[in-house]
Image (cartoon, rainbow, N blue to C red; front, side):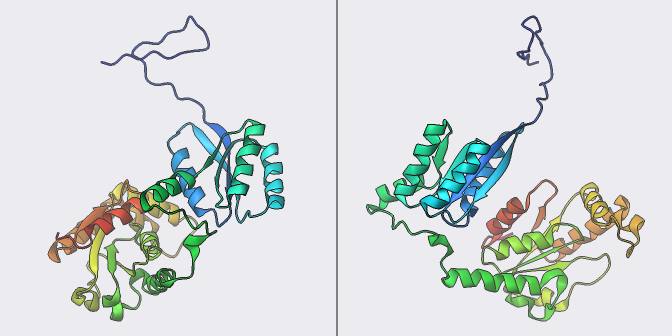
Length: 292
């Protein structure tokens, strides 16, 4: 058995073989300065903040900061609520000014992209082009994502089954297994995704069963999880039989039917009970091109 000692306010207090003390949640200010949309910063900041369970970041996002005048306004706000400063600014003069101002205020600052650009420059043997918002160029890849998103929205919840063979991926599953948000996430990656609900004893659309191009993936979750989600979604709704919709025994039957269908057609199944949308999407992408 492990023994743990925890420091306490009183030097005379010692705890042995004790459960970890639940620390109260603390808050800190996280300032994100970007010369573009700030999406990269937001993702990086949240990924780092997620590692600290007892600290919650209060996010301040400053997009499209490209002049000293704009930077003055940003630091006026930072001065009011000091905290960690993360930034993505390709203009080196402006970036140095961010570091200098933070240093004078006694605040930590990190250029999120600079270490990555340094590695690229070292490996490729050429400096970066330093183009602001370069990742948001309206190129073929951008329009491919837009096309995928349009397709996905048009084929949500079993709509337009006649041309479902044009999809790259089809997600199937009972109600509230995160089919729609996962489809949209994949569409943002440029992947045409349709989703089709599985309803107990209701046949799936014939065009979907005959489709040869898409990867079909079944999404399932625990009956308890689905029941909880359905209860939350039905608050204030009176258009369905509430008791039947959230009953765990009934949901278990739905899930058994869904598993049978997936087994019949040899479709891979992913349990989304404890997965985020991003994790589910990553698992789906890992299946592409692989036998199952």
